Length: 225
Image 1 (cartoon, one colour):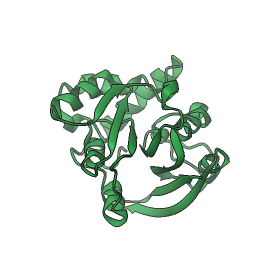
Image 2 (image 1 turned 180 degrees about the vertical axis):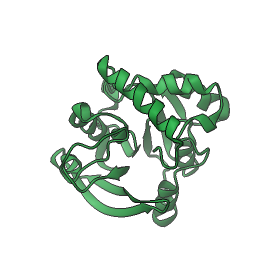
Image 3 (image 1 turned 120 degrees about the vertical axis):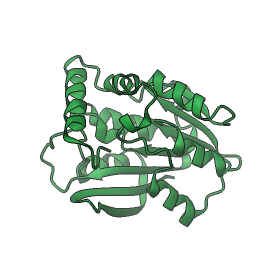
């Protein structure tokens, strides 16, 4: 998130995130940004109008069959990741806290089988508990401040079904010192919370953003026994 963004865009996002945190509504700034975009995807830093390349790589190398399985896409943005999973046969639910983003998804994919819904990662619907065979979390945790990190990680873990898979894509920091953000990259101790919540790490791949060699990103696959 936010790679190669103009300085004024980065500063505007930081201002929105700071204002939201000061109001104790740390995720409220997302809809503000979508509304400001006025239908122009170029104004949304993370909207590439294609599945995330690390997700696409995972789908290609693992070739999962989604038939009869339920998938959840967290913070689905404009819907490309959700559509990629639907094409693999998954019964996909995709949510975002932004009503504007969800309406945008429905407009982009009017005939989609994906169930696009407005929901809050910090207030997950109770019926989603342990309900999804595949959960995809891409760069949402890193977009929320450390003050709510443990709660967010717990929410993400809570929706992974028994024998289910969690796929996480995130920025990574090697220090435990609090970073400046957004985004706020995740540390090893923060990622370890997933294992404390009953998820085993199966695969961990490190990626470097070529234009910003100091930016490390991880794709981690977890499994719940």
